[in-house]
Amino acid sequence: MTYEMYNEKREELIAKADKFINEGKTDGELNGIFESIKALDNQYAEETKAQANLNAIKGTSIPQPEAFANKETLELAENTNDNSESYKNAFIKAIHGETLSTQENQIIDEFNKEFRNSDTTKQHALVIPETLMSDIWQKAAEQHPILDDLTPTYIKGDVKFLYDASEDSDADWIDEADKSSDAAFSENSILLTGCELSKSITLSWKLKKMALDDYIPYVIEKLGKKIGNTIAKAIVSGKGKPTAKEFKAQPRGIVTALKAESGKPNVIEYSGNLTYTTITSLMALLNAAYKSGAVIYANSKTVWTVLYNLVDANKRPIFVQDVTAGGIGHIFGVPVKEEDAMSDNDILLANINEGYRFNFNESMSLYQEEHVKARETDYMAYGIADGDIISTEPFAMLTPATTTGK
Image (cartoon, rainbow, N blue to C red; front, side, top):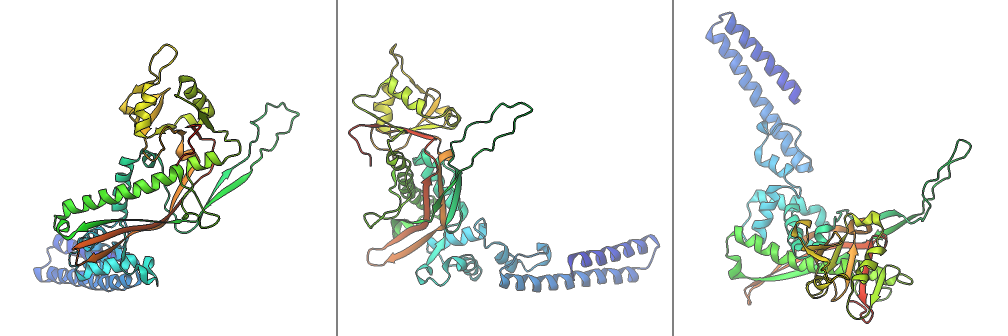
């Protein structure tokens, strides 16, 4: 029986009862209708419960209202997604070492079955819930503003990003006799195939005794810092894919791509102390279209010993302290942010979302391993991610002439 059929029959019985009341029918006749409504409710509830159990086994969602479904089965069917509060709670209890209920084990297994597949190395791994992964990324972004400014994607498997590589002219002014010229579009692309990313932390069993409300933020903070350090370093100066085995495959960084260009048109190498005119030359490299949304990135040492002390010809500082722009100040209206993934004395002017793509090809998962003698637990966050530059136009940088970068 569908919900529409059930609702229609129930409304008919209610209307009949209402009519009997208005006509002064006996209590016996009314009670008969009430019993029919109760029987109808029970029948629909039983049918919905059976359908809910079947759908849970199939891994599909429940099509009918929760009021008439088996609650535990409904939760299993509806809560096996990474936005689920039930999966998040089960995940937290699992990594805290608590005993899970039958239903919590079912939720864990249901959500991770596609991830694990037949790979036995993943049998003890748990996909990190989306809400916790968001917290980990936010913690990483607190340490690295370049991550806060970046908008990553989460597309499974290899992913291709297309972009226009043409240098066509602008539109033309024409009169009635002229034909419009076609605009050239030179399609190019980058393929993000994914690189293995792994970071671990070790916690003592004594530390695991802390309350969940304290333990989870602690784990998130530790993983956020380690993952953030790795990804931010890769976005800035990652080496990319090796031609041999000289290094591990990793995302290609912005600085790496800028320095690899023939003639380094977007890189200014300077000698001695940085000057006002060097900064204006840097600003001139970036097209005006990219300046809205651009940021100046430099590590803390470079910000406070170099940029902070810059003055113009009249000895007026060009660095203006201002935390309202999302950084610690600005130069020529462009926010300045402390990004410690940058090398000393390197300064990057970047509109990162216009020129860089970063994708998580596989969701981050968490492995744990117990060490009885040491009374410690290792937590390893593992995922597959990749990143690359799609255009050098939204980027420009200053680097010392004697420094090759990290």
